[in-house]
Image (cartoon, rainbow, N blue to C red; front, top):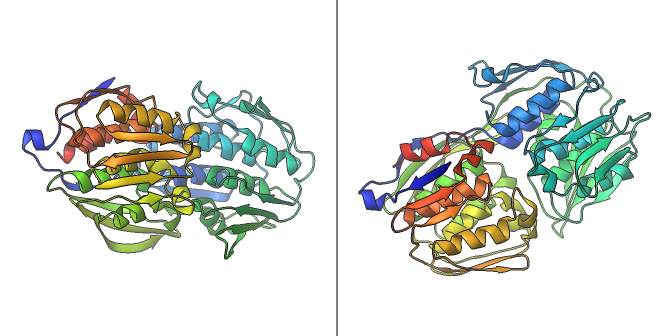
Length: 441
């Protein structure tokens, strides 16, 4: 499917209105897994209904959890998950299909390493290209009988005849998925599991584990590293009662769109404002963006608030180190913002972009160049000179949901029409994106 974007200014419309973007994918997937091994029925209100969460719930159903029909995910009473307890899962008769969800595969790898049955975890052709050794190697060190396929999926996990080892792991690269996999494996360990991360990453797993009664401590050091220490539970996990906030990563496209579009005025409600996810927010504020937070409160241990975004004149910035880790998923749309900023914007320490759903580093550079952006790749990031008057043309989504939506934002400020090939890939996390974008135009 191709999608055509016509600039608002060309049709004499303003980007304005109020929107609740879809709920957080990361939180929904984690809730599906932890709710499945809790005691009692968990209630997940406003879960995200998308390809990735369908895959996670289907995997849990194949492991013996009576998850609700997928069609009921948007029930106002919430998604009901009757937990089977820490040791109540059963072997699947087939390989667990994670679709294209790297989050589901990596978290399941940790989750299943402590089970007393064997499993195979597989996924789409796209997922089979993503690196898994960063998860399988530390799990092996914990005693898991786990093997990848030359560093890639599928992953095969043998039966755990005894608890996994207590373990200290110094992560070479900051990754919330790797951290989360090891923490979930730690539920089945004989002693504490300590993970040192070189920079802060999203901490949804730690927050949710605490909410079900697991002892998880975080110790931050002066050099910017942090130790996350999980003590395996002696008691059953408590059922969840959770309202999933709107996903900041989905809101990011409209935050940037409103920031760079003339005379824009957009309200985004109930957005998750977890500090470990707000790298883009902080970067845009430093660049001069006009973003106000209202109605700030806490939902299920997660900070939530409404965002009011209006047009602004952005200027250049430099991103690296811990800031890069805090906005790794938002770089496609951040790059679009940088094309409209005055001066040279530099991004460093973003080599992780090469192993996302696509090679976002090289792919994004190529597609933005088609629109006329002055962008040059570097070994671990890119450099953008702006502001640049973009010109609409045919671009490719690269079958990457975040690239497709970022290109749509670029199309809003490009002269003429922008046609995005393969635009249906947004269904991975945001099936209603095109409808929501149209509602603001």
